[in-house]
Amino acid sequence: SMREYKIILQLDPERYEYYQKIGLLYQIMTQYDSSIYYYKKYTEAVPDEKYGYSQLAKNYANQGNWSEAISAMQTGMMVGNEEIWMKTRILWYKKSLNMDTSTEIINDLNNMLAVSDDFDDSLHIYYQLQRAYYLFGQTKGAVDYSNLSKRFIESKYGLYRSIFPIVQNDAELYIDAGLMEEYKKHLTYIENNAVSPDENIIPYFYSKYYLHTENFDMLAATVDDAEEGYGNYWVKCYTYEIGYLRGRLLENEGKFEEALKMYTESLLYSPSHYDL
Image (cartoon, rainbow, N blue to C red; front, top):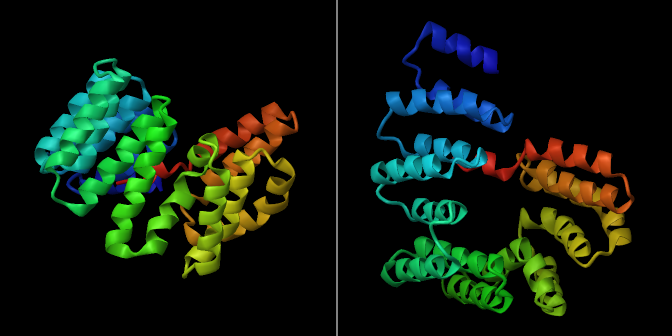
């Protein structure tokens, strides 16, 4: 498809969307200089479209060029109505550049939360605060924000939808915090009340639970079902998620070169490539 996209551009250079398509393909192949070239062509042609700048920022970040990543995201934020996910990503880029301390990031996020009047924006900030506390080694604070997010979601969408993100994203956090039984209770609730298509991903949730509890025998016994179910749930990214599980199994067996190959191949299917 790369060759086809380039031919289309040769025939019609104003088909600007193909600059973005080619840029994404190069990004997936980790050829970041080439990806930057095509995303720059896209932003020059469509300067008021925010996602081109966010992908430029991601490429710079993947190269460790945090100053350029911040600059590109700030430009995208100016043309994108200062969307909250862009603001929070800049915070993390600044942390990588050592421009922000952990206290400053948490303070900035709390200030954003104080003035947010949008449900989705507020929920995004709760998740970022949870991430911040966990990354900065404050596990209790991270669990507190996980529970705050749960109550926030439950107030609008009910109990099931409030528990599902915990089961989906917070296994490692809860187990690190010594809350294995609480996490297992949430997992059992989702299993017993799953609505379509969520039932397909239950085996993956169990496999991830077994991984974080270091029960590699059960992980090996469930990973095939997890792969089949995840493929029916979100086909774009299941190779990434299942590849990581299989890589950990290989690592546990001492097959380090095979594990590294599995990790490398699965990274090509990382969900970060699909957040356009």
